[in-house]
Image (cartoon, rainbow, N blue to C red; front, side):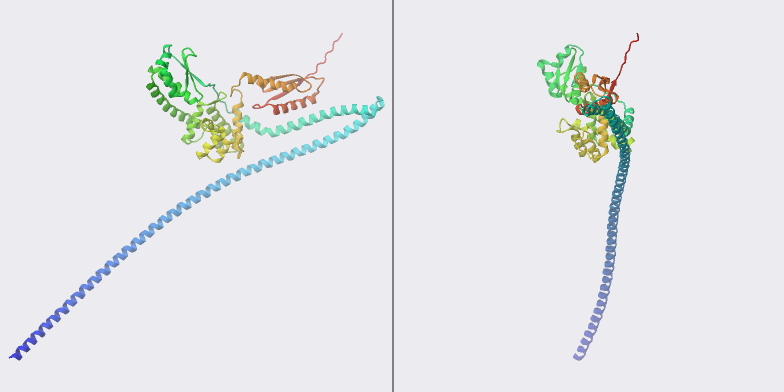
Length: 519
């Protein structure tokens, strides 16, 4: 019974163990299946993450490659533009060098021709000297035989005659060579200057350091002065000008050396008179309004000058200074109009010489811009203007042309010479500048005094406002050859002793009158 129970228990245990074992195997299989599924999921996840990372890296690499390619394209474009600019500059420089070489070749040819002419003249002179020696020997022989003179006296007489003949021949040869050289050397310059002058004509006006404002009545002076002079003191303090009330009837005079400040004060005074309300606060209000309007007016004047010169728009600081030149005058010549005139002359001459007309006009327009700064900055107006333009980014050739137009610095290009020439033409042409009567008479007196200082001169007259000097000589003292030589000597003396614009013509007049009476 117990054995059966034990066996039954063993059988039951074996059955339970088998069931447990089977369950464990099933559980193990399920766990393995689950682990295999997780492993597949992990592998799939890792694959997707790897693909996403690879795609992200590929996109980042493509973006980096695109950026580098764009930077490289921009760099290549900048290098290509720099190369193109260098090539253009090189072509311009080669053209300039070619033109210089052509001019040098032409000058060399002219010098060679001149040397050939001088050699021919020298040969002619030697032949004449040889002939003169023969004639001298014959003349001396005849003189000794006919006049019964000793050799010393005959030699003295002969030498005096030879000296007179040689001086006449030298004067003729010198005149011929000088006329030939002047005609060849100045023909091109005369043509260029004549073309520029014929195509340019500008009017000029006169100004002083004062401005006059008319009054509507005598009672207005009292209102301008105000109680105990408070209005006039306020006006002078605000505007910075001097008000002269009692000098001119029915008018007040505003005096100031700054032309812009004087013009602002004049307009302020006129508006106060029209308004009728004159008191310190109203003066400040009107002055502020006029100052703002004056700033806009100056800009308009500067822009108008740039447009009249045929140039593209310029930087506002440059335009503002150009507009201020409208209120500045030099020897009664308006500086802004003078600058526009110089710009046109520079452009005309540059076009005739094959240079850049816009660059020449720009240099001519800006050449006196330093005069608008000379009150505040020390130094010559040419140097001051050049420094200002350099800070504004102007090209070196424009800066040098402005700085060198009064030869305070050396010329580095042709434009500075063109500006100097155009500036002299604009300043020296008749009617451009005023001249005091004392200076005018002194200049004429100096011309006549120089001519009367030469031997054989009887009278001298300065005519054509000092542009021509007519000299009357004694016919018994000077012959025709000596008259030509005298004209050249007077011209040299004037060039050495006097400073004058343009040129002076010297005319020597020699007249011989023979009078006889028939009985």
